Image 1 (spheres, rainbow, N blue to C red):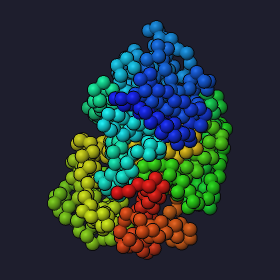
Image 2 (image 1 turned 60 degrees about the vertical axis):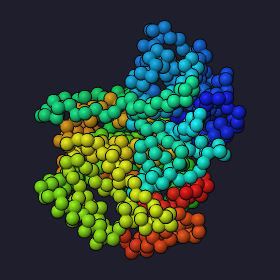
Image 3 (image 1 turned 90 degrees about the vertical axis):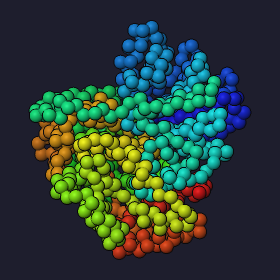
Image 4 (image 1 turned 120 degrees about the horizontal axis):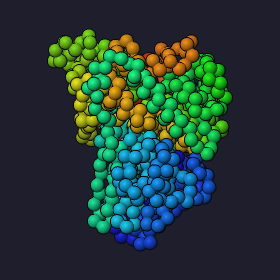
Length: 622
């Protein structure tokens, strides 16, 4: 895991100082080494901060050139099949000067060109400059585990792992993108290629980009996508072959991701996903270290006993860590560190966990991805229940009921979003269950910004996958949106703020393809059960007393903290104590009053506070 930054320009770059400043703004992503490289014609500059994981020697430092000197790369992430690829490339005559996976990417590009992406199994974002063809080649991994922002301009293209790298350039315009902000307020994140900063884009997951320095043209394309369901698998009655395949794929993914030249641990919550990761790790390594975090004073969030059961069963070297109190003082830190804000208050415990685990290891394996691949979220059950109970009711009647619920029930009323979901076309749509601010709320909230245009619903609708199967549609939607723009962003930023690399074996692309192509919906979730196939594997490999039904989110008691004390005071002062806020003071006051009455506004207020802290930290204007 590292930080990368660079520029490619049609003409020589005269102002170069910002590149080093931007690189070092990413020091938390790579505290072990720093490098900078410029092409002979001064048109391309690449910068890198290194967190050393594979081949700790100087021979693996970046930016890295190949032996011929006409390819140069900066790379963030890990290639988990690099040993296999290295052997294949060596058989073709390629030689290597290091033991790093970075050098394998260079050789793979020289051998297969941009088609090398199809062969990479990993979590990655990289930029490779081909001096021969004067091409900058950038790519991002299939699920979106590693970030990459870029700013195209007239005659040049700049990129960085995080926005703070680009914002080291004093010439970068710092204005909010209105459509991105509308999406943020509606969904809690900015989807796809959009970015909160006007003029900046995100390279979407599973996409690649070519910037031609001869013509100035840019080509963006998707190199991978979720496979369509296999019709034969959908009708298959026997789950045993699928269960065997799942076990073999997961075991191999964990084995590959345990490879590192630094200490590696397992983040063990005691839930199904992390427990299966621990089980497979115990097969692959003689001594596995597992970590569980306790939050003293909040017993309902304590997973200690569940994790202990797994650790004892597999004989892991188990470490229980006690997290510090989640002080409100952490909010400015995470707002600054997360760059583009996203609404997930569990970023705070994720940051605290990463800080503690980093004291013991440099790499940790987690269970992210299991809920999207195998339908583990409770809202999948509820969606299927709604479809079964109300699917036969004419859509117009259901839409009328949904509109009535919006009109009659105040925002924050428990169940309001689910009543709104009644208006969904269950044959084509996916309701926004976790809507932050609906259209009416956003109009009131953004009243100071005249003629505010609502765009989020149309943007989201365009991103709904086309599938006749509601569960396929919903899980695919979450994979490409909630997972990519919330979960993986949260884990990347929180862990990298502590220079910890977190890996996700369940997001091995072979497992992703298996889950979406081979596993039928009936083995994922029904109206009263979920994560069916994964729990079958849990029954096979985990101790018999393991509680498969427990589903505990990773969260903080935000509602109770906002009733009184420092959190309530901080939120009020941040949102109402300054004349520079972008939001309607009246609308904010109503939210605070509703929260005091027991309405569910905690995440909404968190969204506004985090945005304001970020905007003021980086001096962003409308």
